[in-house]
Length: 206
Image (cartoon, rainbow, N blue to C red):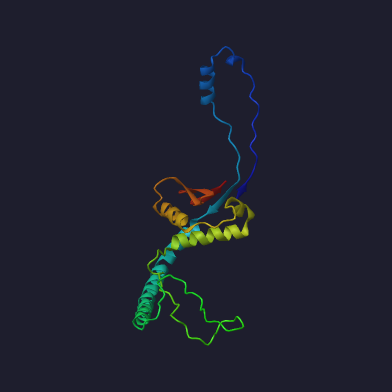
């Protein structure tokens, strides 16, 4: 749901009762008078289905992470063995996370010699299992991205950027705990949002 409008204010009329009041009295009166509400564009994302899906995906994510940990243990042991073997033979290994350099031995025509053996193994260790893998932030991020791809109004409020992982994790933690009736947050530094607990709505605003 999108609501967009321009704010409008009527010029203040001179009240006869205000004549004769001091500046301090007039300022106090102005502060007690309610300000005229302003209209602004908003987008409401309904989250009940996402919250329900999270319960179904939690167990699958836990099993998936367990599978990753088993693969990571075997894979990383092989990489460690390869790097240790390269060091024992005097070959230059590749530090964990480092990108291997290009081979300097090139053919005379400027093309790389594809027949030359690699100097070291370019494969890297797996770090997936050691990272946080939660269904809630993942599904929320996919839902926001899908809404942004489908609706120009969402894309406009998000300034064409995707929600950051850190923001999604923090926001989902607030959704899961739900200690307040509402919770302010951001999808990234230029995209404020408001989560309404009872309605389970995420309101994007400018």
